[in-house]
Structures are given as C-alpha cells and as structure tokens.
Length: 205
Image (tube, rainbow, N blue to C red):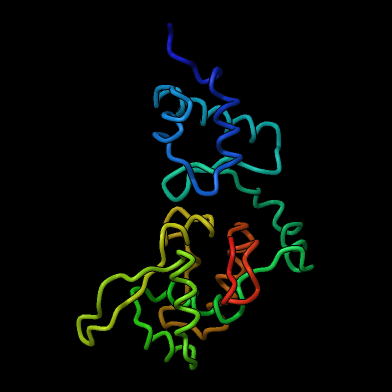
C-alpha cells in the first residue's frame, strides 16, 4: 500500500487544526494522520497557499513551535470592535501592565515589577504564572530573587515567532502606560489576547 499524499490527508489535517487548543507540530500531525512528515509539510504548504489565494478570513501560521489557525491582520478592525463591545473580554489593566513590563524587561524580579508599576503585583504574577504566560527564569545574580520571563504560550497568544517581533521601544524603559499601549495594540492586531477574562483572578483562554 502506497504512502498517503498531501491531498489524501488534507481534510484530516484541517480537522485536527480546527480542534487544536495550541499549535500542533508537524511531527504530531504526522503521527495523528499516519503519514510521512514530508507529506504533512507539503499539505500545510498547500493549505497556506489555498487560504491566501481564496482570501479567507483566517490563515494558517507556524508559531510557537507548531501550526494553528489565526484571523487575518486585515480584519483587525472588526475583531477589535467585537472585543471592545464586550462580546469578548481581555486581560485586566493590572494584568496587561504587568505582562507588558515582564515582556519588555525580562528577566525581571517581582520587586522590580512592583517598583516599575508602583503597586504590589503578587496576585497578578501568580495568575500570569498559573495561566502559562510567564515563568520563573532563574535568579537575579545580585539579590538571588526569582526572576520571570514570558513563555512560548505568550508568543503564541500574541501571534509572534520570537520576542524580536515585539514593537521596538525607546532605549530607556517607558512609562507603564506606554508599555500597556504597545502590548495592547499588538494583541488586538494579532488577535492574540482576545477571549481572556476581564479580572486577573479569573483569566481564561
């Protein structure tokens, strides 16, 4: 029996990606559809081209170590209005500010985050840790305090391949409001942080 081709597995790959709650690697897809990695790679390339050619409102992208569907950037205005009208909620202001500080200043200690924001961030940091957006990333060499950094899941939700794709900021760390604006704008454009709860204590994907 001959090995399945890209055309043979196209429907199955689409079905799996529609159900995926996180990016799926080529290897995982190949195992799931019982096909060679090369066939899956060809299938993904053909799907990407097909969605581009037919002008679908979504696209298939490789982010965070795997493949997943995302809404297209040109529909950001529609998505943004939908979010702002309350159909979906986003991170609370406190959580978004804290996440922005970590994203642009990592690795960073809890004390340093609190100093930048001017408030205690223990509760928000715990929530961001629990939800997989940040993680412990060693210790500060001087104070020995635990430092935090963003995760691969953060990149996925933001629609980024790496931290290098974060918007560039001034050489000196800007005010928290500017950090929040940068991260918030990117979240809306990329469709990354839509669908999370408005209270940091109740964040949900």
